[in-house]
Length: 391
Ligand code: PMP
Image (cartoon, rainbow, N blue to C red; front, side, top):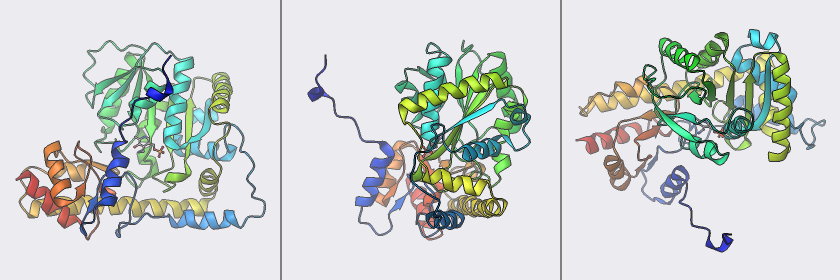
């Protein structure tokens, strides 16, 4: 038996460590391109106006209390989350074969989905993750005893592996960290492979509406898979598209073959959830619930989403323009072709090190930058610094 006194020291989290280094830096023009959270053009966190409004109403609502939510969360929140991702007129909803649990944001949805599959799908099959993927995916699945393997991202023709029956994790939109999404034709080819290999699709959807500014467009891949008749699950996060990072509002949705299976899955999700967290947090879910279930607030939210996604798109254009204007070697089209919060710049670790040490620009070693860290006042500085390190 190991003694707790000999527990080894774990390394700090890469992203949170990067932010700590940025905070400690006293250089005036320092830039943080590591953090995966939206910032306005002044570099400040942004509380969505619709969120602010609903939050005021909640605080002033005399009927609000701090009782526990049901184990599976707010029913109207879960129903609205299902409609948001599948589309209100989805046949799967009409056929009563969808079930959902409110979760601790997207991370909690990934965890509960992984835990459920490890119990009721198989502990023996591996889960395939795109290479690269969100840094938290591997530990989340390993924590529940599932083996993780990589698939080349993205090459639907490469089906040389014997992976029949496995689980495959797909980023619904705005792939993290690459910002590269499959085209609709490529999604169709991916679905063909998944169907022929009898794989279980595990969709992680952390950027619906934030990616393109269009909620339906960002849900296209998930809806296409549902239309093709797959059984699947979807992890939804309201961190990015509602700016509710710390409130931990999320949802795990299963689409199944029939309503009987949905009822059985729901009962087991409730049992797992009870032992894991008892019941999910109320505040963020109440905000999302009010917005998704009120047409006027929903329209305001869509406007807020457009504001965020347009600023990000403008920053992509501005960065590419500045790089081209200063004759930076290489092709920078990928900056504007990529989608969502991040851009995979192609910068290599030694170049990243110079950006950090010489120019006080903080990004992860894989060359991923958060577009939200750019602003009209720092984009030229960042472009000039990139120009310097690639020359
Ligand atoms: N999945 C992906 C791919 C992500 O990028 C993120 C956010 N970084 C998440 C899930 C979950 O984040 P959260 O738990 O804050 O919702």
